[in-house]
Image (cartoon, rainbow, N blue to C red; front, side):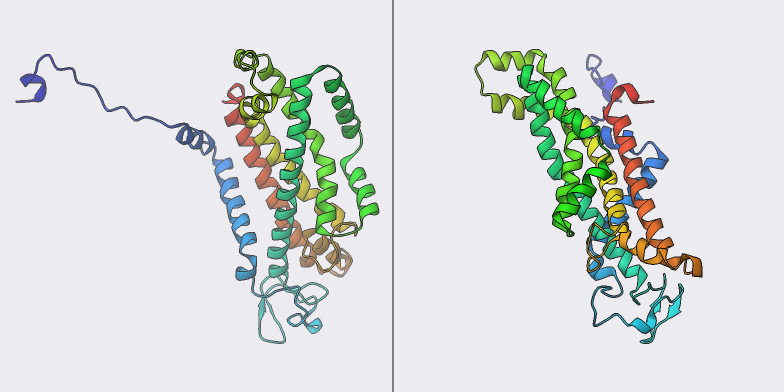
Amino acid sequence: MSAATEHPGAATTPDVKVETPLRRFASDFFESPVATIAFVVLAGIIFVAAFAPWIAPTDPYDLAVVDILDSRLPPGSEGMTGQIYWLGTDGAGRDLLSAILYGLRTSLSVGVASGLLAMAIGCCIGLIAAYFGGRVDTLIMRLVDLQLSFPAILIALVLLALLGKGIDKIIIALVAVQWAYYARTVRASALVERRKEYVEAATCLALGHRRIVFRHVLPNCLPPLIVVVTVQTAHAISLEATLSFLGIGLPITEPSLGLLIANGFEYMLSLKYWISFFPGIALLVTIVSINLVGDQLRDVLNPRLQR
């Protein structure tokens, strides 16, 4: 006899699977095959970049390993020491595969570091402008408009001409270029939150400005901020590669995809295409993957854009 027959008055409730916000977010994000592929590719790029010293066949910037006699070898060639160069070598005899892995490591480090610093500065400035309003908001937004009216690469060129070459110098230049984007985004979101009842209630309770801004307003501004972080990280990586290609970014002793592309540019007419081609493909795949992931994040985090 079934349980329903033994207890006629007992109500049976079906098992309901509780969907957590994280699981719902993952389900919405991986609903797109393109975003899923981009996420897997980006995760692979981050993995090989993080463990480049252990994955790369050689250290391409160790002078004791590099042999000038192995310069400009085509992909699949065997070097003087018997090593197989799967992607060939550049003009200095460096293994191109190892150089690309080290270059990805540098590009991602510069992009993430400059993005986090610019986000911290831009968030503080945007929150101050939105929360206090009035003349403070007007002054800050005029500075933001002035910053955004100039091309980003022009500002970076001027700063690097003054500061010189180096990873720390290029991070400072990229922060100076990016902070205004974060400030405008956070200000727009904070203005909406500033007029809501929970902020007015916190103000009536005489809570401190710092507590209201950073514990109540800022957490509700994070969804659009996450999307801006992904887009600006890709922009920073491409800008660093452009500056290094022009010879004013990183020094030649530092691994950089932009420098690798620049080093092979002079050999293009002699059909040594691989020196620039493979670093360019690595840079393109990295930027496209980050942009596709950011695109999907925008659709998931903004309900009005969900299909």
